[in-house]
Amino acid sequence: MKEIFFTTIIIFCFACTQKTDINKKIVVDFPEVRWLIGEEINFDEIGVLEINVIDTFIILRIPHKENMFNVYGLSDQSFIGSFGLKGRGPNEFLGPRYSNQLIMDSTGIKIWINDIIREKHSLINVSKSLESNKTFVEKTFDIKAEHLFYFTDDKIIGNDDSKKGRIFTCNPKVQEKNYSSFFPVIPQNFHYQFITHKNICKLKTDKSKIVSVMHYFKRIDFFTTNGEIENSVIYQDDFSSREIIERFEQNKLINYYEDVTVTNDLIFAVYTNQLDDDVADVEKELEIHVFDWSGNPKYLLHVPEYVLNITIDEVNGYLYGLNYLSEDKNYMRYNIQEVIK
Picture: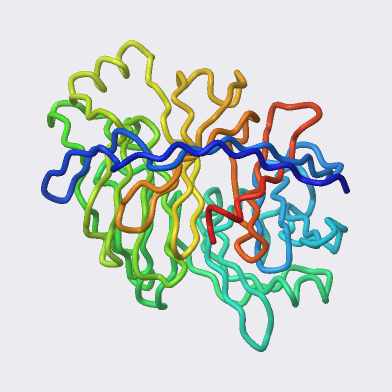
């Protein structure tokens, strides 16, 4: 495998210019800027919608396959096996996504999977699934959501496409969701906040905090594990609610944050700054905005490839990216050892 080149240009600022408000800060620039040059990784797979580094595995989500998760070795990208049988039967899935929750104990490596079509949240033992050649499900809850995080059998936090609010807490045993309100605030006569406020959530590794990046606002919000807003970051400018309504009505919404991945110390958010109709259709260079969990800006990473989905190999110091559109650079790996040191 050819050597990875990592070209770095660092711009040092005396201080990161930002305006501070109660629980909200506007970030104008980043203290360090870097240009990444990566290496292509070959998996010989098409139709992949998600890549995740999970312990010593790289797991690809491939919806058109009979088993929708392919597992590869992290060190050599060799194929190990698959799981996630497609279907409507017991322990089968139709629209599964990894929920960014990993459990490791004496019985194996386990991950939480949210099936947005069958409306199920399942704990899969990956180790036993690979050993037995069938999907080994240890626990399942019936619940509808876009993103879900398990805390206890009585407490799950997530978000969905409801018109009631952005984040909810839920006791899955009684199926009652308690929502936080929509914000930024838009006039009550606007009935499409569930669209304009779409966001992607990730849980901190130690389960102490949730981060939410917004598609159509230049905004990153931090929540407590009770679903309450803690603080927010605005990138460069905070536009008015009237402007977002006008963009929606003219079908000119701008997509800002398309994906996010996290470590226990840092947040990596993919910044597209692209018309929504062009996302996943028109390639361009991207930025990855890196913050700590207090919302302080750390790095601005320039990425030449159109990697809309990213994941972190924290142990070895690499960022992996998936480009849905490229014919020759679908899977990329970037050295970010200096970023996560």
